[in-house]
Length: 165
Image (cartoon, rainbow, N blue to C red; front, side, top):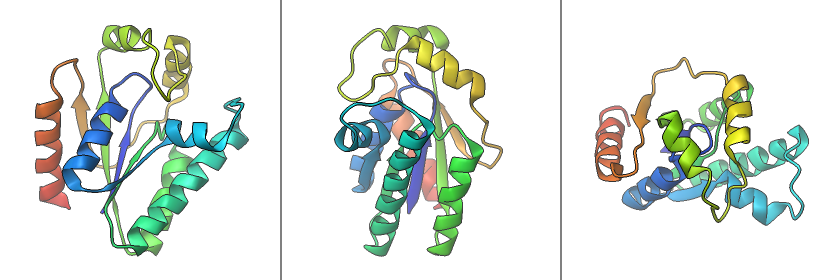
């Protein structure tokens, strides 16, 4: 099972995705954490982003080959990025379950004021990505994150996964 949790910076996707992975006993790959492990001085160029997504694609392949579910956590803001993962999943005989995490903009702005362990994104980064993000047209679950609804988000996601997974 391949689950991609995506959304804009500050949406709560990583908080949600890490807990979803625990619930599913799945491998968990966070793009921000991976970037920090791979790249000492991060510049967020397209080449650098491609390296991170390449590493995530390899982790996805390894998990499928090991017959282990995986939760991938990143913005996945471009259609071309999602298509690469979909193509590889099809090649592996799998399909991707997409879960989008959103949040009200005022919540996002407040969240991005607080330093986080792995993410360097601030509100300006959120605004830049929001402007260029390409929406997912395929069927997917959209969850709205607040600061106190993780239990209901997980419940809704697990129900969704069980009906289509």
